[in-house]
Length: 352
Image 1 (cartoon, rainbow, N blue to C red):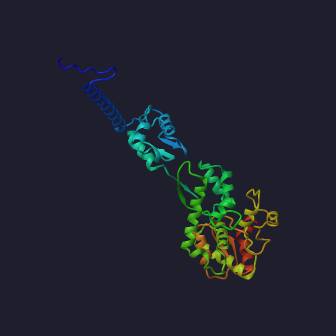
Image 2: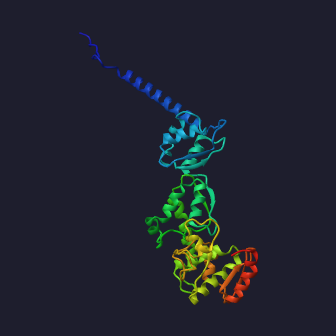
Image 3: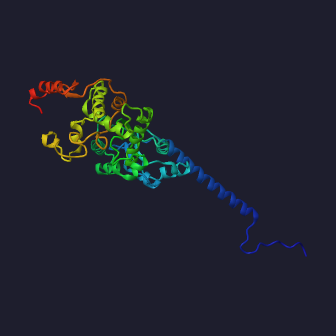
């Protein structure tokens, strides 16, 4: 017999057929990947013309997922609808680096530029100024009106024992330790972090000033801040601060009561703007007409100049001062001179 033919069993294929099928599948897969890559590349580098009514300011809340971020961007008209941004973030491996906060996007940015902005955390920063002499209630008002959090939340944190312990403040609140300055804040920032910025700024200033321990009466740092806050509230004239600090230090040295109105006002729960004799006779821990020495803590948040004034007061023997009704004060060394000044500048104008 001649050589027999080789037959394939049922279900088997010739090797050549399998190779051709594999090549065909690889080609299809390659074309698919190449097509997807080309589409994604085109999506990534094509500028996005923001639609009419789009909101360029976009807030990404903390712990928002990638899908959630994409949805927010689409809803605000920053990127076009679709899953392109999602795939771009995944392929570029930037999806785990996207950060929360407020962002400002401009027309003409590409999706990749938008993605990189989110990954870099290039958030919008807002300047918030806390004026010298603002107390913690006024500070909470400023932050609440600016949309940084609820007023009561800030006040609660300023009295929170955990916050006090964290920053080593042995007092009933952070009053006096929240340094007045201009801060760069971002939307969605944790209120604890905002307060921390102010306390840390104050700590740095105190370190620069030697820890506040080198002062004329060996006051504690807390007492220095307390007196500095009184100086801050008594005058807005920079050159007067060392002189007013000197008056109070002279009175403390002699055992005289400070008798300063701003402390009385701070201790009143419902002060209406008009300080009366009844107020001066109302006992509170802050009524320096009735208590000896300093009140238990600061009545405001003093700036650097007022702190320096307490550390380096004017070397004068003044014990009294009275407003001249022009923003400045008349200083006296004894009570008769002071009484004459009061008659001249206050009683003649119908003031207390």
